[in-house]
Length: 112
Image (cartoon, rainbow, N blue to C red):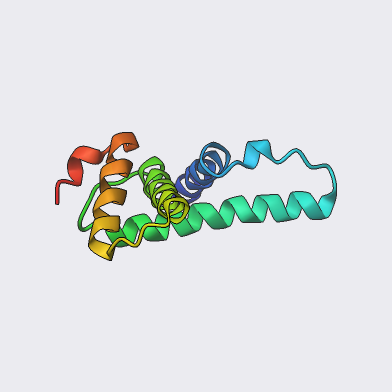
């Protein structure tokens, strides 16, 4: 039973690596590049699980929500850098929260 459970956990991790972290888009044929691509995708799966577990007490987020949160953060900072604006941290965090909630699946859980 334990081996069966572990097998499915490996399958789920591999699915996440393909679906969320681009493992299926690494079109490489050299051994070293395949090794690096697989390790990078697996590392990102593990890192996202740790970040989600840390945040689980506050919100019920998914891997998609986590990616959208960081994408919104990157976009807000790029726009502010382009505009040359000097906004305070509270404004930036509120803007990131509003933009990321537009694309998050579980945004209704982030009311706070």
